Length: 186
Image (tube, rainbow, N blue to C red; front, side, top):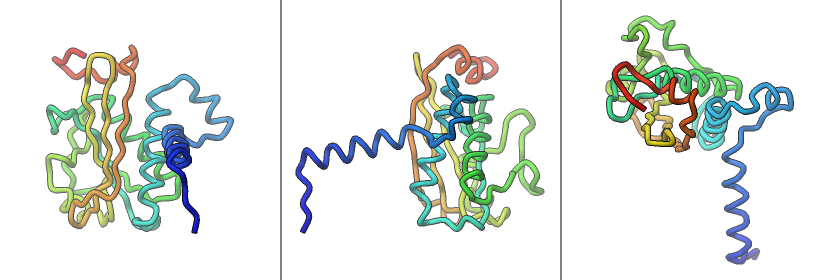
């Protein structure tokens, strides 16, 4: 029987944690995206979600990605919430999953300039209407020097959380502009 010593276990856990924070990129992608913390963080988060959900989802069945909501106002978003959702959808699609574009579907209330929200509505109804097996939803919370992001993959049939991932974006000038909603100071 193989036994791992506590120091060995710690090393394995630290190595695994370090791998989860970096997106797997080709050399060309890495050069193109160098220095862009938003897209790098979105891709790393999507990679983590895909890795966690692989055993639970059928790549041939649709997955929806909703606009991320401001945690203080679940029915509002900003360009940041919409951008992160688009990047997550791109990365999940590129990983081989079927991502359904909500904006093209009939029967969804999509607010112009706001996005497609799921946390304030019935995720089960939205997922079933689109024939989706899962919905990716998320929130972001601005702080003084950073923005905290939470993503979840919800099973469309019952809203059960299948995977989740949290990360922090540094509040640089680009993120500040993207996170700024009308009447909001970040």
